[in-house]
Amino acid sequence: MSDAATNFDMAGKLWDLANLITGFAAVQSMATLFAMAKDEWAQTLTSSKTHKQVIWGTVWFNLLYIVAIICCGLEGYLINGQNGVAWLGTTIGRVVTILLFGGTTIVTFLGHKQQEEREEKEKLKNIDPRQSPK
Image (cartoon, rainbow, N blue to C red; front, side, top):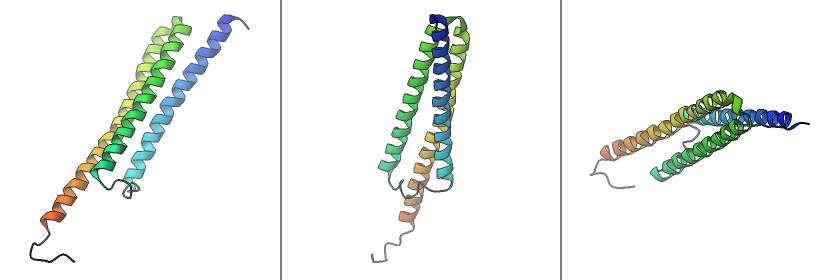
C-alpha cells in the first residue's frame, strides 16, 4: 500500500474517531439531562459538595473530549492538508457541539443546586421556633 493510501486511510479513521467522540459526548450529556428530568439524581445530589463534584467532573470530561477532538483534527489536517478547511470547520463544529451539550448539562446541575438551596432555606423559614425538636 502506498503512503498516500495509508495517509488517506488514517485520515478517515481520525475523522471517524472524532465523530465517535463527539457523538458519545452528546449522548452522555443527553442521558444525564434525561436522568435529571426523571429525578434519578435525587439520591446522589444531596449537598452543595456533591453538586460541585458532579459539575467539575462534567467540566473535566468535556475538556478531555475537546482535547481529543482537537488532536484528531490537528493530526488529520497534518495528514490530509489539502482538505484543511474541512478539517478546521468540522473540528470547530465538533467542539461547539460538545460545548453546547456540556454547557446545558452544567447549567442544569447549577439550576438544580440553586433549587435545592432555595428549598432548604424555605424549610428553615417555615420552622416554628416554639416547637421543640423531636
